[in-house]
Image (cartoon, rainbow, N blue to C red; front, side, top):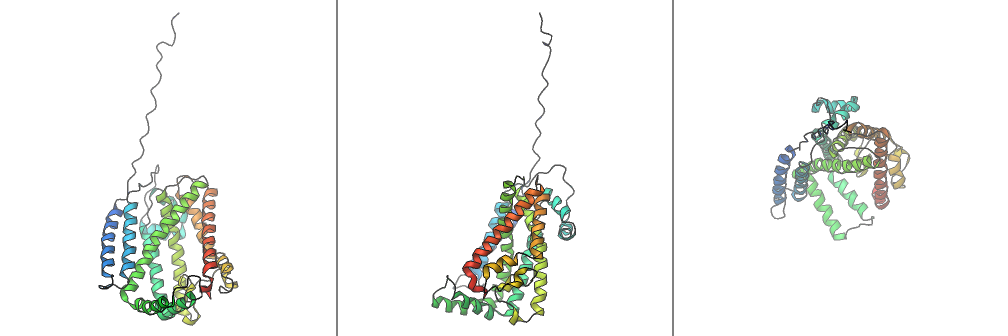
Length: 334
């Protein structure tokens, strides 16, 4: 008896969908290489004996480190998102992050951009640091720091303390040192975003989400920008409205905005409790909400639970680090 299905042919397997092309941000390499060269030159100019750039060794090393970071980042492929929306302009993202953050984060999912946000945040931090030093004077800041170091567990030898006082004031007054400090704030902004983005990515994955590193990097950059602008902008106003004698030479370097429960606790008496209290405030909760929203909207697949779980995990982690630092260096708060 013949097989009725002898002429049957199995259908061909479905074609394998090709992976969307994922480009690398090659432009970062062309930024990174010149920065490495410039950094080496600045280091050489800062060597004792040449000393054409005061503080050049530290500044040049920071510029080199940024160049290396960008060169390495140029090798990381960008994420591929199906049916991506039209890319928002840099101006649209910088303005929109204040008024329509959800739309901005969704656009960053397909088009991660970050340079403008990080550069602006770093420049704002640098401008505030320069204004703070000018307003309170290098003498007061450095002498206060040295006085407190004498009571800390990391007390340097007396000879080193004396040299640090004299040279520290002289360096702080040098124009090249001030420019270097400004540039190091920008470098710190890049490395800060890079580290936090890595921690955020791990936290999202732990909570079951799916996200690309460039997506977390862009999200963290655009979380930092509005927070820094608001915090440092208000602090800058307070800096010139308030008497310099009423401003703490160390704590004031970070912020002069008292929108939290830190007002109710004396930092010098209870440094650990003060750190905890400063996290309970308007700007802290704004950052927390913005982080959770950014992680939820900026990844491949991140639900609300994963976004908030990752954001709260980062919040607690940095709170614990702050508490540990306060426990060790509490004498500096006096």
